Amino acid sequence: MKIAADFSKRVVVHSESLPWVASPMAGVDRRALDRVGDEVARATTIVRYAPGSEFSPHVHTGGEEFVVLEGVFQDEHGDFAAGSYIRNPPQSKHKPGSENGCVIFVKLWQFQPDDRTHVRLQTDLMQSTAHPSFKNVAVTPLYKDDFEDVSLLDFKPNACMVISAKGGAELLVLEGSFDEQADTLVKNSWLRVPINSSVNVKAGSNGAKVWLKTGHLTDVENQISRVQNA
Image 1: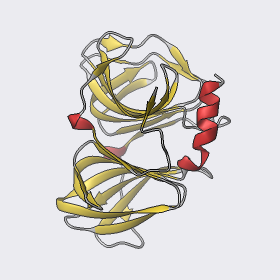
Image 2: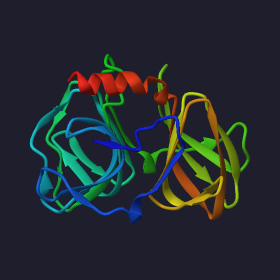
Image 3: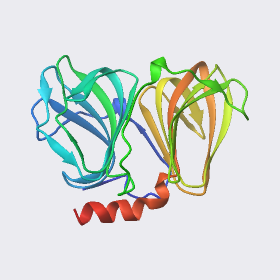
Image 4: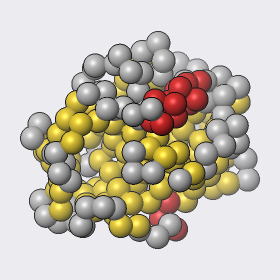
C-alpha cells in the first residue's frame, strides 16, 4: 500500500476530513497520512482507540513515536494523557490500549536502527522558551540527535516564521491554525515538505501550537528498505 509515498512532493492532509478505517484490532481505527507497506509499514497515522480497546502485545522492530492528542493512552509503562510525547525505540515492546478511549498521532519505522533511547514526556508540564530568531514564537524541545530534531512551537496570533527544511520537515497542528503557501492548516492538519525546502508559517488570529519534526526525511529510502526486509 502506498499513500503520499512520493517524498519529493509537498503534501497537506486535513485529517479531520478523512474517514476512519478499521484496523485488524476491534475498536482501533485509523486515518492514514502517509504509508509505504501493508500491515508492517513505514507509516504516519492518526489512530483512535475506542473505550476498552487494545492491541495485543507486540515488538516495535522499527520503532514507534507518538503524540497523544485526546484522552489517555495506556500500556504497561504507564498512563499517558493528552499532550504526552513518547518514543519507543527499535526492539521495544508493549501492549497498548485505552480504558476510556484516546486519539494519537503515531509514526512507525522511522528510527535509526541502533537507536535505543526511550522518551516519555508530558509536554503540558514543560516550559517553552522564546525562539532565538523569530518574535512571538516559543519553542519546547522534545528530542534531538544527529538524525532529527523534534519540538513544539507556540505561535502568538499572526506570528510568522520561516523553517529551514534541508532534511525535510513535518508539522501537525495541535491547536489554532496557520497559513502556508495557499493552504490554511487547522487542528490535526498535517504538512510534509521534502528535503532542501522551507516552510513559511503565518499563524492565524488565535495563534497556533504545532508539533515539528525536521531532518528525518534524508533517510526515507533506508527506512522503506528496512520495512521491506523485516
